[in-house]
Length: 231
Image (cartoon, rainbow, N blue to C red; front, side, top):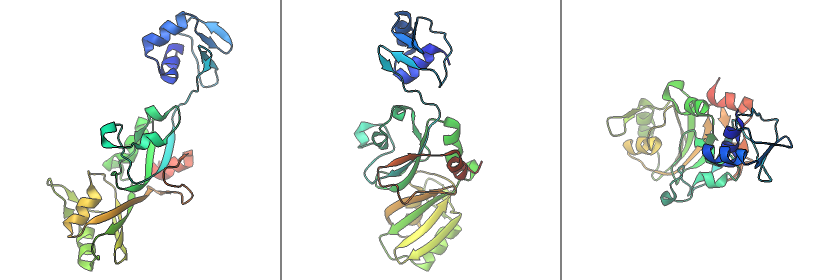
């Protein structure tokens, strides 16, 4: 990566600002001042801008236990954002791998790797998402049967889970490979019931750690990522 691109990305400057700073001898590379924006740098190099070391990051993969009351958006008008929970220099570069509603909780994947995010959310990849659902009314065998067979959920959209299982009178497990807007809520509503609590437990074969408290996050290993996408 060119030095000006490095300073721009990790110093949060525009590309023109980073070139100006470099040419004014405001940047040192491995302890040596340089005014050459085209110098090549990598993750092993030490870059200091106006006395401040830049902390480089490359592809980042995160599992967050999303708490209730947070939105998967950066729009402040919508409320508190899940991105506020990631107190790290790479937070501004992250995207979510499938959103959760403001009142929903559970596993949320974030990354700055666009290809990985696409593999997580693309319906063609058939990545399973498992949800634990609490309903307003007692669940009937008819509702489980209807949801299992698939239902039209509005806007001429048909939803059919890969797995539906009743846990008790007011709880069920639903597994989907698509991520339509409010899909679980609309699916349960189409069966004649209503979701009052929604929790995502699993994506692919990767399950949310029981040790991860609401609002906490952890970096994903290569093996974790393979569990999510299957590749």
